[in-house]
Image 1 (tube, rainbow, N blue to C red):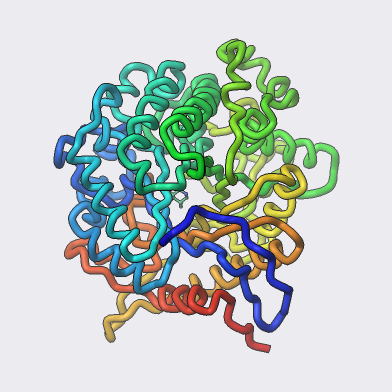
Image 2 (image 1 turned 120 degrees about the horizontal axis):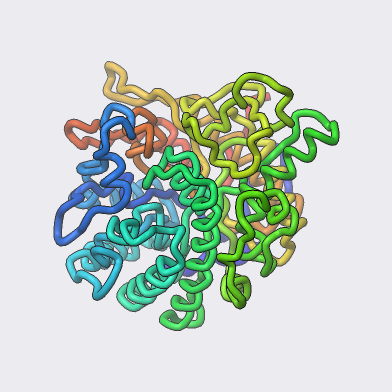
Length: 483
Ligand code: IFM
């Protein structure tokens, strides 16, 4: 029988055998629009990502999620693959427009049946289903009504959360409300490199608040529907922000990006208020009057753990009059995803990079985990995503060798282990991703999977990193590093 993510006793540190605590959750993760396909099947209606990906020029090569990895039809095979990996949990998202087309009204039973069958098959294999309610596929009709900048969208989300919990609460014990609301708000409504592709800094700040409110209302709805032992959480892509130098200007640039990337969420979600410096930094754009009395209390709900997604650190300085402000790693746009921070410059951290151009830096994960533990000592942490894209290919033997991904995972898991030994309450790790999939604005050009997908045929080929990860899970330890 599977149990919800639970407290685990730290294992003693041993530099030769990096053993993880007994009961540590080993998982893998995906998201609906990135893998399911079947975009118009069984009553599913378009989401903002269907509209966006079908808009010429938005997604590389004109790729869409219409078919993706065809998980909607091949899910049995994917569950078998996970069973072979030996994962103890699988984090996936529900497609809102598959469950509740148009974002209003009753659920569609066929959509729910898909998730019922999937969760039953997972449970049969001893794999705990971890459900994310929102991984960016807002029903298009709700965007047409104003989207996340509008307060009513938070109420629609709470209704959807109640309906999903009612239907699946007998099987699913662990619920995550939102995935990376920073991306939804600031890439979706600020820089426009994500759906719905709007470029309005005030809309981005309003969206951030209404996503926070949606989370708070959804947690209340989940708790009302679910048994007492169910767990509720949110996943944030907390940016580990570093200043380029120790000058006061650069340190202040890092503070401002930390406020816009992280504390705009952790403030209300975990502390019950928006940070004063964020309100001050953005005052020339908005007076934040969209935050109504009682909102921050509604947002500040007790959580069972915080989901943390980490890929790479963020390096910033004050802009010193250089042309352009550098890439923040979140896609190219003439519009900034950082409202009110036009005078901050972004730098590529030193060292190797992945196919996304993101620096490989496990120390950022260690620093991030220890900082979160210091800031929120009572909050258990789960790494809900970590992984890397590389230019994988099938060799003449029909295999996919991905030593760079293995090195990335080894380094980052060693950082997680080091944090646990330092006393941080990390309860689990979910590798992003189970399968190569639709990488948003990059389409199918970036491969994050432990399992290679041949898109024309849908054939799955576990990469060498999949076998490596299975060994780690079996041993509950990292392999010994060569001397
Ligand atoms: O693919 C995404 C995922 O959907 C959200 N977190 C980051 C991943 C890699 O960019």
